[in-house]
Image (cartoon, rainbow, N blue to C red; front, side):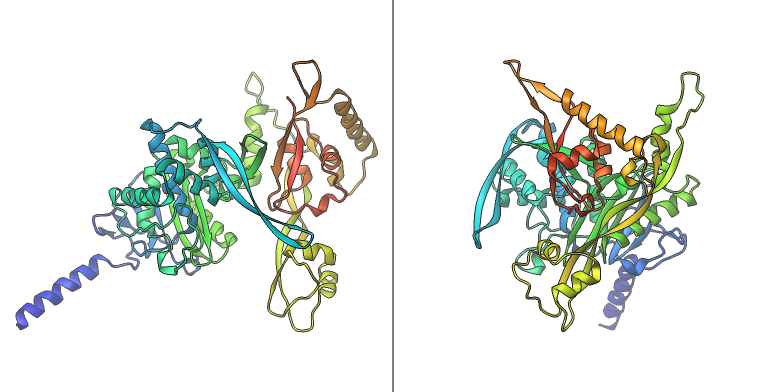
Length: 490
């Protein structure tokens, strides 16, 4: 009996050693027939800022850093990577087509004479448009619509998601819905481990259709009524557009902030999985530093800075026919942007005092927080938007006079004249009977957007034109989520 007990203890100790999760210098460790783990020191500076994660080198096929990568945690909208995978597989297997028209129904709420009214809106999208909505602005209803269309019902599609996870050997993964929203009970939340999410990411990277969507910084998605522009929740594909090309972000209260990021700098593929960060800034900083530190370690160089990318983006357009660089001159300007803040209400405070403290109006505080009265309670958190300056690199010939502290009257008059000329000529579409009508799209204001930045994204659009069409008096009062009407060149 003692001999049998000793054998069992030895076996248990060996198994525990195989599942060891601490650092081991440069020792190569094989875990559960998974990719070998070969630690590289000093890649991640803030391990305590996350619950779990890993960094995978796609060239050596090794995990070069990890923290609890075989433990399952809530994953929120990282779930949508599995949705994207099933959509692409169905299209390639001719079960559906990108151009299929799918009706998405949404329940909206509005107040009519102090009464809450709920109504349903039906919008028709292509399957391709729905996948853009799911992957870029992380639209939850788009995922439910995809599930009903491809699976017949949400439950049937979720069953397919779990079956596909088993086929990919994602044995620590569970899906209860296609969107990643919290379940009625915490233990039923969609969950997975960094190791399983790595397997899913590698499978998604086999399909260019997924990467071509996940790397988009700003996407224009159209339905049968209008077009809207959405910003990618993964800020890294905007800040490092030449290096980072995916994949998906996620957030719920239980999951916290998560990110599955992929980078192909100089053809060297890295995949970073991070779960359970405290906020978006910490999450993005951890992943960006992780990728940059490892690229620097292997001699490729750090991820490009946003300002460097701005110069590089225009460099190819500015090289003459003989190869001589005619790179335009750039200057740095302070640009006003809206930043989101929170204020925790203390005993004795009122809206008037809070508004005075932050330099806003009581009406704005009510609108930002959906308050119908001025009564507030201690302990509640209020949302505030504050205008701050950020330094950006701008081409001198594209500087908007309105963003300069020094008024340039001649340029302002010229811009006004351009607006008048464009109004007189009109960017119009001709009807069959010879009459004309303007062509418009809608832009959804994102955090950090200014009228000047929005105008630069669209050909022939100026700040004054945006103000006039949308009846904007104060350009510094843009609120994230607002839809702006934009007249575009046909």
